[in-house]
Image (cartoon, rainbow, N blue to C red; front, side, top):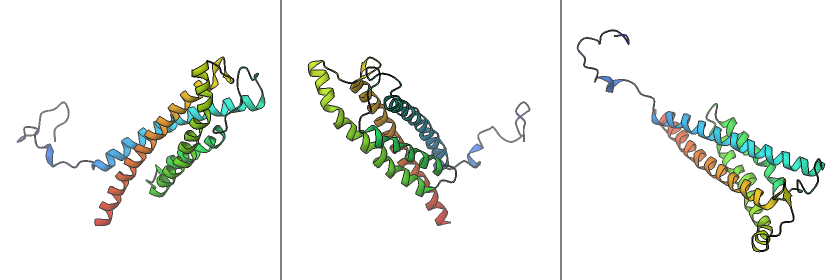
Length: 183
């Protein structure tokens, strides 16, 4: 066998690599999808921490209500949205399908459902703001409804991509499990 700097092995032109072992595609996909989901979980964690900070400042009255408004009702159940992310992280080390499925189901309950409710809860305030230019809640001088809709849109995108990648990862793990059962 030739070293990197040394001569090529006698009798080969370098095109005989087809016979070598390769990592199965579902293992490569699993690693890639886990990485993507972890990135999304970290983005979700940042959004979640910002929401917790906003809610804490509002409840503890560390700043006046002109600076930070009291939280909307949808923000309280959304605090549970950290549970699906933790379940997802727990499923990664041993490719635990049941934890990943629980993560996906609880993401619908604790993440997506509060966001849908939040969009409906804030809609009248948003309508009032954009029709008449009147805002009643503020967040550091900005309309609270505008800022929270921005957060809501970001959170929906993060959770939607997280669900999409989780489904693909689940399919990848099922492919791996089916191949093991055949042997």
